Length: 382
Ligand SMILES: Cc1cc2nc3c(=O)[nH]c(=O)nc-3n(C[C@H](O)[C@H](O)[C@H](O)COP(=O)(O)OP(=O)(O)OC[C@H]3O[C@@H](n4cnc5c(N)ncnc54)[C@H](O)[C@@H]3O)c2cc1C
Image (cartoon, rainbow, N blue to C red):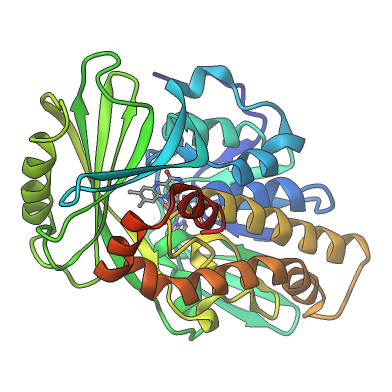
């Protein structure tokens, strides 16, 4: 399905960009788009730079939790055309060896992620320019602002762009984070297989599947219906070799349990593997980090859209407030952003503390025997 929203932003290409902007935003995922939307309220000129082409196709389950929906409320209703059948999906644990299923009260809106990302682009106002197919190669800070070298299609050499502030929302690749000399995080490898299904063949559940028979490097497996297909996902710990082959082994086991038809598409991707509260970094000086690039995603559930939206909105608002008040202090926007992020950091640090238990074979066995309402309550916070 093709995206069908009018966009208002100015798409720029080779040599159409200015040398200097009030704000430069790196990465056109949910964090970067929301950051650009918010900082454009006070900045005259905002450039959003994206490494890939737009609209993009990112591998994702497309599960929007209530925090994502709440974050989006002020920007308008989520368009119906991106919602897939079944509309609402319940989160459920499934221990295959013990044949135990525990459905929780956690629900997701089931959306097409490509359409969702395209719709977010339509929220960008006219004073945001967008430069696609232009990966940022490096960033540095000067006494008055930020400089970024960008590889622009059609240019032989990287182009130098200047800005008063930079918001890095470059996802798990996290190039800007590395330029700041921060500890790079490891990355999970993810494989998503799209399998045909008969209408109504699967229950409206996001099954988080585990079995002692799955490969050692297997972090988590999941399966959910999405219109005419089911997504079967495998998440592997960093450094896993032959992940696709191991994914196929698990897929064979799942095919014996679920009525899955032929495979139609496979995606191999990555996700940040953030384990230490110290890896949650708001930024440095005039550079703010948002979304997965700042480490803001749930290590227990892998859910990242609400954290991307909420951190992007906060980063954009912090820059807008600094620009609107004519602040000269280099750290003013960052200090505001740090304050706004504090509850999110505490929430994510709590998840990190719970992760070793949740992730252990022991933890998964315990989840089978404790009462379902308790499992459900715990899942709401994780
Ligand atoms: C397989 C999989 C399934 C998932 N399922 C769910 C789900 O169902 N629900 C959920 O809430 N979360 C899910 N997530 C997590 C969620 O997709 C991410 O956490 C979320 O997209 C992060 O948003 P972001 O804006 O921080 O980064 P991204 O969405 O990763 O966007 C970053 C953007 O930056 C661009 N970029 C990277 N480097 C550069 C550079 N140097 N210069 C310019 N641009 C650059 C990239 O091309 C990309 O477009 C899933 C993740 C994976 C991998």
